[in-house]
Length: 390
Image (cartoon, rainbow, N blue to C red):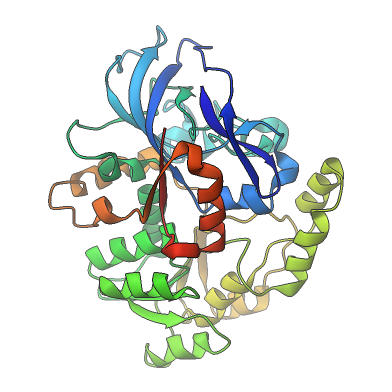
């Protein structure tokens, strides 16, 4: 089959890889009809190369049609239309019972000290082949796949794989009070969708970004926007009676603009042998913390910060004095897709209140995936969300 594979830093190739096959009785094979390029895929493209091997198949946002199932997948049959959550979870362990599917005890990558396995996302998370491909093997298919109806386009449902539950969890974890205000830092796919969900729930939303097209897109559906700069925390406070918003959603993560020391650390690590790079990144502070530091600065005293941007460094310095003094609450983590999917599905109606049908800015053939990665990483042509079609 054809797929997108990682071949090195900023090098994605479209080509032939082995067809997936059933390996366990709880597996399914899905024919991919659409897959997304996620902001966290850009971390593989730019920073997390030490945890990848040339030829790894990328992608973790998938919708498709079931082709084949193992004997222990009673709930699916060939021809079913399904969305595949980005994490692989069993649905029956203690952690899944707590609604923490990203900590699934059946698929935890224990040799790396990490949580549940993820599709297309490095040795840290199991090195499971991803879904930017024509076909995908789905482990734990007795639980993971979400059946969706025929009829509406893939755009209606594909975001159930990651964007919608991740943004939903970001808003949930933000603990925004009724009638309260949330600032969303970063208006990429997750930040953009978090704004929509917060507005749908009746909150006041302030969005911050550097990219004019992303700011304009957010303003068009009712977000108050600010351009990122040195005085943006003061600007946020000016809009919120001088005290700051009740909550901040940090939707940027490890590659935020600013944090020059971490930027240098990221660049230096790119010249080290893979084994040394891995050790360096696991022990050094290599994340650019500008967005997180802005969140700590801007949120009101007693407020909540919801961190949904991905971080990868193990020794990043946090301003603990300020966090403690301001009595802040921090919540964070990979989204637990199946925890939220039943709450989200009723919103994916013909009324389309979250405007998911028009959320993608680009629809691109899978064969053009390498160019799509470059466009998305460089934020060219107004790229916010790219969907790939095999």
